[in-house]
Amino acid sequence: MGKGEKIVVMNPMGYPPAIQPLGMAPRPGSLKGKTVYLVDCRFDDGDILMQQMQAWFVEHMPEVKAEFRRKSGVYTERDPALYEEIREKGAAAVVAVGH
Amino acid sequence: MPTASIQTDSFKDLVDQFAFARGMPRQRFVFVPQPVMGKSPAELRAYVDGRDPITGRPVMEEVIEALTRPLSEEERRGGRSDRSTPRLVEPDTEEDLHRLFLENQWTDRLPVVLPTEERVARMLAATSHKPDEVVGRMRPTSTREAWEYTVEKVAVNAVMSGARPEYFPVILALASTGATARGSTTSSAAAMVVVNGPIRREIGMNWGTGAMGPYNPANATIGRAYGLLSQNLQGGSAPGKTYVGSQGNNYAYNNVCFAENEERSPWTPFHVQHGFKPEESVVSAFGGCRSTAFTLGLREKHWREHVTYLLRGMDPHTGPTFILDPITARQFIDRGGFDTKEKLIQWVHENATLPAGIYWDYQLIQNYVYPRALNGVEPYATKLKAADDELVPMFRPSDIHVVVVGGETNGYWRIMGCGYQKSASVDAWR
Image (cartoon, rainbow over all chains, first blue to last red; front, top):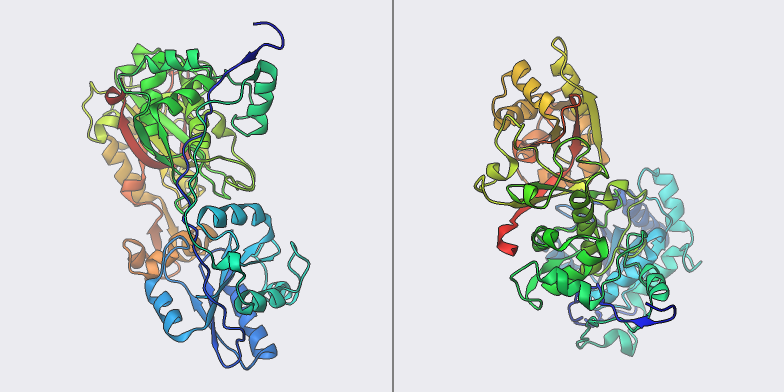
């Protein structure tokens, strides 16, 4: 093959799935008088971080009810019961800590 | 539900890519410093009171804003976005193509064989399966999107690894397992490959001296092909995005690929243990390969203690695979009467124990086993009831495996912490 001669080779990448864009949930505008769930997803001491965040809410935003919960199961697993509780009683959620 | 997701700053690129692939590219993230693990409550309060390392803004200001700021038009939007991968790369010189492959992170950073159509066609001639047949799907983690691949795409990666066409059915069988050799875990796990059956001789694999080292083209390139096809067919293994192993793992260059020494093993071959006939050719994939323990032989007086102390030093979350030279396999029979692999596995299960208090305090056990125990999953739920000083088994029998390999130059043996994933018929891909 001569120097500078161009060749054709094949692409080694697989085929990605289509992306289904999801619209985000509308925001309430204010958390005053509402409940925010602080959820530990059960990874690497995220529970301690969320408990510190709960303490922050008590000190700085006492008008917001901050509920701390530890998700059931390993961090990759869903917790339908907790999610249902958040849907029924919460206005928002903070989830930590991912990686 | 309006949600603010807290991540650590080491994973900014990963979360952006993940959110994009999951269809929510404008998901509202807030970052705190890495690590969270091992920090005191006071230190983590400082994270809460402090600033997002990525934006420089106060963490709690961002949290409140993430939960309350009205959505933009783009954040509200749904729809569908199709993606695909070209079959060919733009024509270029060899030198520039090598540079492109490296820049695109399509290689293991070693030189590859460029996959021309002629080379791929020669590889495809080694299987009866059509080029456009879907072989499987693979993903870097269970939470990431799965990419799909065909026989032709596997052939492209096999060519890149330097594999010969006669190895291709083994490589296809590995690809068909869907078990990635490029798992994205901060623990830096690698894979292991064990080949059984007549294919070993047909393609000249090594199961004797140096089998786990760089001394045989089939062992070397099949293992390398497994790594390349995993990273490319699953959508990538790019540090910070689709690979987050903190230290990396040198086993990943060839994924510890070898053939079992069925001829000199006193026991049933691995594939027969898993339901295949002795005359079938099979490849078995293992994952989570990180911890390794090692010693020489079994002493008459204290072999039990030596073995159990090795096991206590292993990662308690990942089952051990005993990788024994045939000399040591026979010693296990001489010392302990383990005339079957199953008897040895049962002994390991009963004797690899830890005080419960120590077992449950491992971070890996806290992350991956403790939540299951709380949910009542056995045997973990019962283990959780043990008193702190009560000895509990580290591993279930189903997590313990035994493979024989080596050339009997000495009775060295090792225990690899790795999880058996799946076996696949090589014959099905001829």
